[in-house]
Image (cartoon, rainbow, N blue to C red):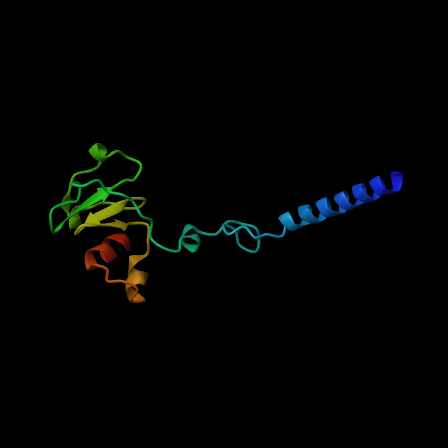
Amino acid sequence: MGGKIRTMIWALTLSLSFSLLAVGTYADPGKDESGKGRGKSDVQVGPRQTQIPPGHYPPPGECRQWYPDRPAGQQPPPVPCNRLGSVQDSFILYEGRAWDASFNWKDHARKKLAKVPQIIIDLTSR
């Protein structure tokens, strides 16, 4: 009986050791080979999405900066697109769509992955 228990303990210890070794072998997608973090643009594979309540898009030809962490009533008002300041970490509402201002739309358009309005390319390339 003692031999069976010893064998079971040994097998359990061995399987636990292999499990712990396996945990350390998985790569962290937010880090490069050196273990240091990669830049934000390396991790993001597509534009962020957000939900805009009905009635909050600007009139045609204007833009509205939208911050996803603010309530709808605390968003900046619509303005002519060329009057938008820094758009980083926000969305640009334009022509019925929310454009992620942190995304590289210029590169996206260059690769012909989607039609991107020139004003969006200009605003997100500053």
